[in-house]
Length: 540
Ligand SMILES: Cc1cc2nc3c(=O)[nH]c(=O)nc-3n(C[C@H](O)[C@H](O)[C@H](O)COP(=O)(O)OP(=O)(O)OC[C@H]3O[C@@H](n4cnc5c(N)ncnc54)[C@H](O)[C@@H]3O)c2cc1C
Image (cartoon, rainbow, N blue to C red; front, side):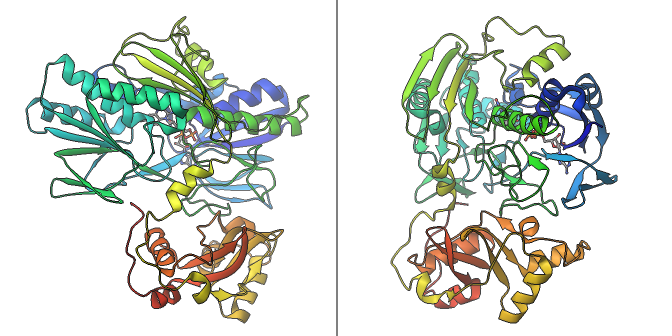
């Protein structure tokens, strides 16, 4: 009998996985997609829409699915019972042999007072901004990248295309600024990518504030962290992304799902995840498709297909719309430090679609009846970038977690924390853990695998599980914990811990040394010990 694969999602990762599974496993699998939205949206050209340089396309998912040899059900994944291989959905329980979670990420406003550009839904706001600039009502406009998990390319495109739009209409005297926490513009694309981006920004007269976190817009000023402010009339910001909360899945504080190199959700049998919902810090369509391919290969192999599944090896390919002539750039970057970049007038991958999916790009082209162009589109111009990424990308997450500065050191976390924290194993049942928490009179437990901290389980998580009628002897720590939690070292000042806990809204902070849990710090405990309130913010 065919392996029943349920794919939750109807976006880039879901479709790429469905297509890859059909190609690799053929009739060994039956594939069902389930998603709450009947259309697949091709979002990259959202940035071009307000400038009348491109249209956002959408396709009927039911039709796409059936052409891809799958079925589509309208509904939303709510939770997973991995033990009984059952997905809880808005249309009832659905049994599966293998589940692939590809629900994407949820955008939320990150910079109070700014116009948040999430995609097609916000095209009109950009059009209105352009009209205000043309009418002389906005003379200083900042385009900003917030901290956290974002795909920053669209804000560069919006800034560059705004500059090109103004130049074409001979509108002068408008100050455009780009603010980003990256040390260099488009840092992820390596030195050559950054240099090319900076050159383009300079050419268009766009000022750059790199290494700055935009925090909020107050009284006509954009506040920056660690310091500085910019006088502005309007600010356009990218959203911060979060993962949807799903019962029975390990998720980070931001709702992202940790996976291994094959796309398996860590600690759960027969559950995979791909795309923006995973905890991989780069949220991009091409990366989502590569994760989907890795998962599809593993699923196909276990369904009996004759192949050796290859792990996810992230290669970032970007096509930057600039409003000028096309330019292509390739950059190989391993371990975060390689510097062998080249620039070229030729496309570096095929077809030169904005979202690069091995199966999805040609499929969409054929479905929409569009021949893949022999060359990348001329106007509005494009900068293509290809980067091989370090699969760990620690530098990115560090940028998100580290407080930017600590003014004066008071007591250290090690002096204040509860030593000998309650440590449980990922396999422990919720019932066992609840008993231990009661016996020790603590509200949280560190979850460690072979001694290494992988999560934290709080009394609130237990409450959520029990409220969802999970049996105490069946639910396991690995399914309900917060994965990859925020941590501090014992040497950190207590003020820093208070800042982390306040900014992230958490009450229990695991203290680690060489990845091992050595203590637990409660918010009240930390706040009492702090000499004074937090002297800095995280920039969000
Ligand atoms: C303006 C903009 C421009 C971009 N430009 C580019 C670009 O040029 N190149 C590029 O590679 N990437 C680009 N991206 C990023 C790219 O769109 C995403 O990284 C990519 O779509 C992620 O794929 P995904 O399948 O994880 O999520 P999505 O494509 O967002 O799909 C998520 C799917 O899950 C469904 N879903 C939601 N909740 C549930 C649920 N509870 N149960 C089941 N299904 C659910 C949704 O309806 C949707 O179908 C851009 C994004 C934006 C916003």
